[in-house]
Image 1 (cartoon, chains in turn green, orange):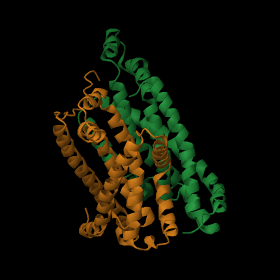
Image 2: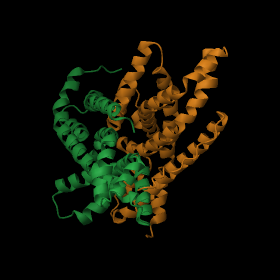
Image 3: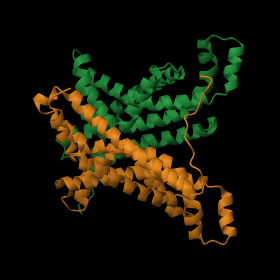
Image 4: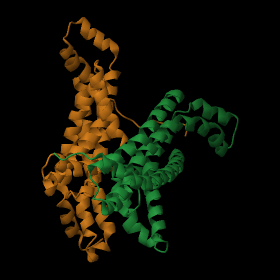
Length: 225
Length: 239
């Protein structure tokens, strides 16, 4: 058995630090896309437009049932050359990364929103109708203000999950924590050993664990969904 | 479509055994670890509870990709075996990581399900003078398992999708195989077809898992003396 070397553990942190900013950036932007797009999906599905409803359902199930890694590659190798060919390569990777994470998780969050919207008591709809509020105001003033606070903890959970999935983007040369340690660090110091990977794992844990405790606390306060 | 489609399918399907092994092995290890860690989370002894808590939070809180790299690098060094030298060895490491990671999620499913068994059931079992073991096997678990199965279904589908990550440590599974096709210039123009085939295969595996789990749900519900709940989509009539 080889000896564990703590010096190599500490050597990894400058590289981790460089990647951490990128990892967080993708998590935050991906989450924003997922929150917004998920809400749009949920509302569109709530309208029950024939054909559109079924197509959207099929799309959501398809995205949820297939690996994110493959979706990233589809966007990167098939969609990107046609749509983003003119942009700088860095920008292309950025757009692909945020889109892949955002769309993937939007398919999950849309179901969360749906459950939240359905949990709003029917009497609220009836009251809104009785007051003859226009359709748009029913959503913005009555339904969503009641549905969204309740789903926030569940959305938070998906952000934490996304944070832990950003490393998949290292496969398309996004300079996140994993890419830094795998490639940059391995090329400079004597390779990335288990110590370096342990350090990356701990960094993920140190950030995601407090967040999930926080989410659990909020969940208890607003009532579970 | 394309003329090369059977070539693509042949190449991709060469990776199918590795993907299926990873799925089946990963699920088996997940189930074992879920029950071990899940019941340990409910143990009256603090050290046991603490240990399983550390395992559960450690694997849920860090990234699966990182765990994969950690084990792929660490296992050969620590155990002094060149396990990463062969495809089988890499696959073994992959199964280990899939099982450890999803077992940590499964532990919470098991804990939640056991806790959701009504307290009266346990009191009745005590009143009937059943031994602690009988209480667990004959009263608590049969009811808890019914609760667990839908969540395990979701977890297993996550696991199926996670097998694609094994391409990171060069396990020759279907995603790795498809990715190799990208290197051939002649094929790289038809990536759309290649990836579509791939996605359909993952979807088929996921559907197969769901079909099996639904069947198990029915069996478990019947054995626990319940009629299986028919899961309708919730009707939001007002929307």
